[in-house]
Every structure is written in structure tokens, then in C-alpha cells.
Image (tube, rainbow, N blue to C red; front, side, top):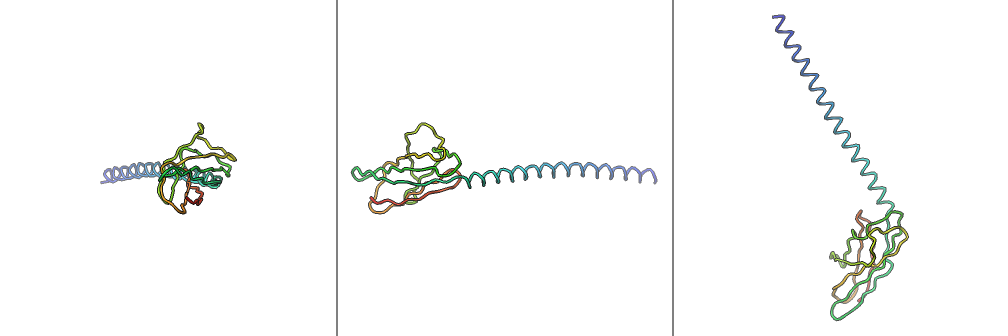
Length: 143
């Protein structure tokens, strides 16, 4: 009976060591994932705080029943923005836009123009420009 008890005790001890090692490895890996996510969240918040844009001017160009809208935008923040990653909403509808600049990086203190074609409707309209990290600028214009 003494030998069997020793074998059972050794089996329990080895099981406890293996379980502890496995648990430590999993907790360590989980801690690294949480730490990396926290660092990424901090970086995203920092970039968002440093990003700012303004709509300087909204000029509708009426041709027939439709019109084209040219927006003059300024990057007033201290963070570079990708100009091709903007979302432009006119009266709440996402609209495609074009721009003539070849560089997609929009550096601070730089002014750029974009054009939205094929819009319709008379009266007051509202335009919203949103950067890839969620910073937005608004303007209203009359057609």
C-alpha cells in the first residue's frame, strides 16, 4: 500500500507542475496581448488628439439640374492625414470625391481641394468631412 500511495502522490505532483506551467504560459501570453492592445489604444488616442481639419470654403458649381461641389480643406492639426481615406457626406449621404493632388499624404498646415460631382437639390445643404481616425469638420452651403 505504501508504494501505490507514493505513485499516486508523484502523479498528482507532476500533474500540478504541468498544470501550473501551462497556466503561467497562458496568463503570460494573455498579459502580452493586453499590454500590446493598451499601447495601440494609447497611440490611436494620441494621433486622434493631434488631428484636426477645417472646411475653409464650399463652392457649388451649378451646371444644369446637377452641380459639382468644390471643398477647400485645411489640415490644422499636427498629424499627417491620408487624403484618399477621407469620407465626405453631403446631407448625410456618403459621396465619392476626386482630388487633383498626386500626393495622398496631407501634411499639417497644408490646404487641399476636393470635388464632389453629380449632386442635386436646391436650398441649404450640409457637408461633413471625416478623417480615417474619426475627426470631422462641417460646413453649410446654399445652392
